[in-house]
Image (cartoon, rainbow, N blue to C red; front, top):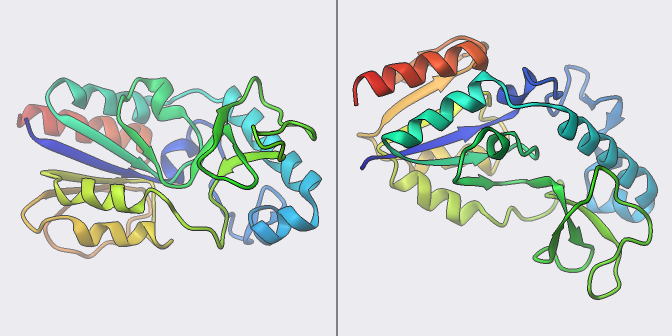
Length: 227
């Protein structure tokens, strides 16, 4: 059975009502990234950072998987499918995808402030002051901030290296280290990109210049028709 490896970004979840990471003004829903998504911000004002991610978590829990998320599940009928996502939502899992690797964490879990490997599911949408890990340290969102290591990069690179079909959905491939994953994909692998703002000029790539909810089902039908 062939391997399909899919790299997804904010564009696949935008049509579920979740904002993309940065708007054109460089803000994330009115916040400067440096004030809410760095270890330094957490040290300066943990209450503000906690509130920010509580609001994002609430939005994620209120959102639903869209047609792009659900279409990808169909590929599991005929292929080994691995999704590598830059998104911190859990919409892939809720759609039914079974192999999802989160590069930047997942907002529906918390992590210890002193040990990122200690993670816990969150009941509801709110983490509060006084919610602590087994070491008695405050819990924070299980999200990789700017300036922190991306712990799943080696695993993601290994997946990309065995892809027979490699798919990019809803990401501009401008943010590293995730953007560097394409370097691990074998030259003979079939490559798809689905994005309405495509500027890709690479030869040998099947480009679908459409929003995810229309482009991904179209691509999935193409792949299954040639199976």
